[in-house]
Image (cartoon, rainbow, N blue to C red):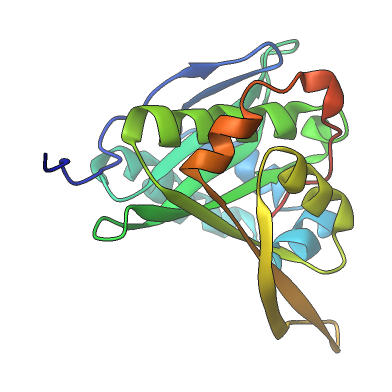
Length: 204
């Protein structure tokens, strides 16, 4: 039996106990500018440069066009307790021939250290493996972010190797750790209680 080529055409709404993941919209650019104004978020994501109000309109166009792409999925992370946008999760670099893609997450200060990132990650993995039928999802996390790496490990990601000196930040070079999770590994982790999972400052 030949499986259909995977795609990310559908833009779902995924609900957890702590977060609601919904497709990004143009207006999310305002909140994302605030997220990226945090120096710590910039460092954790390895994002060089700073953004200004002049960047708002290009960002609005970017977020407003994400629904047109079937090779990536951009979802806003909304804190269900407050209804506030706190960041985003992204599946991108879809490789249809090898049934794989990349994952990243970025949360602002309002979404950190409360388990929101852990739940958002689990929701996206469940959707990618169980609905889309992907086989492999990979990510990169910088060596100075061990808390995020522990979270990724607890939801099933495994360490694969090191990209040496991948980031130059304020005159110092840092390694990036490559991690991935395969569909059978997700099946082993999907039922683990949330209480077993701690939260890091996820930003890849």
